[in-house]
View 1: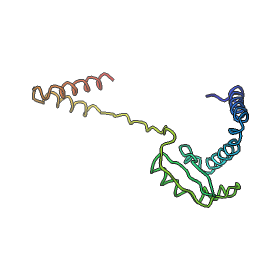
View 2: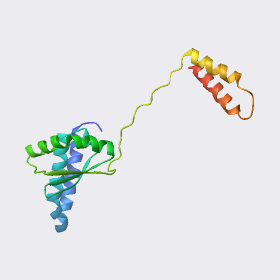
View 3: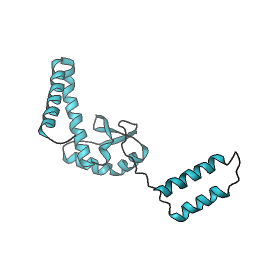
View 4: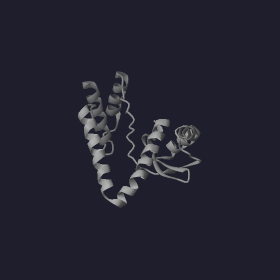
Length: 159
């Protein structure tokens, strides 16, 4: 999404519409302060540790105990090392967090995708595969392998 004034206007209208909807019903309106408090805490956590909180969520904050979800054990281990920094930053922002618990559970789809390396074969390697395909015994068992080798050699030589 590109940044422009209409996008901001749309987001603002959507947020205002959602809060207006919540305020219309007494039971729902009672939830609004808690929702705003959790959103503010999530924002402060994301400010304190931006790379960690791309995929983390606050599950609960009661009795000065913060419960966070992480999508996997590896991120939980990294986050555990950063908890003193998180608690210190939150304390400076007025949050009294006496303890933090981590729960490993998938909340958001992880969008991290590693780039696949392109395999480069030099001419000597291509020639070796070509020789291998010619030297294999012509049998029913080798037919698929020979065909695959010849196709790969032809594809690499046409590039």
